[in-house]
Image (cartoon, rainbow, N blue to C red; front, side):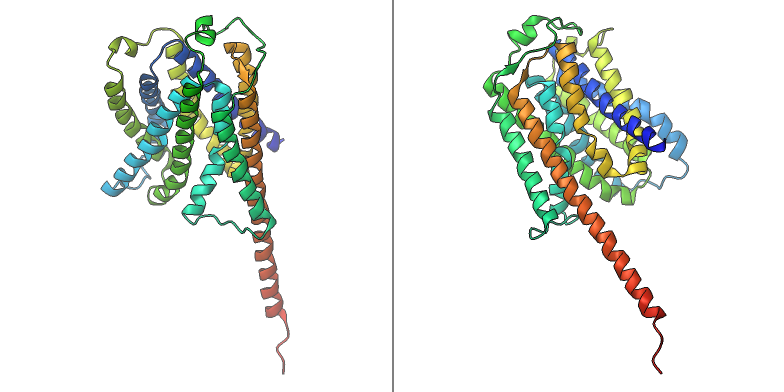
Length: 352
């Protein structure tokens, strides 16, 4: 029964992410500025997380030093501002299916950075090491497939766009040229790289400042300020800053409150119960939900290239995760054998 609860929460997290990308894509197709979207999303996310963080962690949180503040500022720039801006533009230039497929490469790229920072190892001569290398190759193959092969379009389940997008967005001016598609793929690759680097680096900062909720709040606040100046530089038409009671408001509110504040807690709870590997293994669920929902809600035409790239990336993800899990099992077995050997030595009779 406890496992079913964890599985349900893991599915809910992936569903939240899938809906977020669909709402965001709908807002972009409706003409919302990607830079303004990121600013409002981070602003709402900060206002959502801050009260909870102050309530739960203010009294027992360590004092912030200038050094830690600077590190948090840089982390916010990499993991929030660069990630969200490049991912949002990439999503605007491609499709939600492509974005969901690309997200599956985050655990694999994170593993690459972990190797570079000597937090992980690859033993080529062992099966586990070969699985990791195969996973990296499949992930790279998925990125290249997405960038250079669109393939034929698969038939959409729905041609009436429930989220209010006109046909001009999907068939005319918003159609994805090869150049636009390749640029979108490049930007999403940069975004996943930024996210992966952020996931590795934040571990070092959390050792100095372990108050997780306040740590997230400080990052959200820094990213809000950074995003404001970026939006101000790139979006001078202030009429595009207005949020009415429309898809724009819904997308930023959902992204800030549900996808930022609520999902952070749910993800932390899932990792605590089942570990980070389990959490990463559920990420392909987002791709499946994305394909179904984007076709029904957006009337989005799905390219064969997006499906193939998703298959490659999911395959690469599971290869890396399998290699890591096997290494972890071997490590635990080795520790157990060493402990048993030490115990036998202690219990052995002392020769006269």
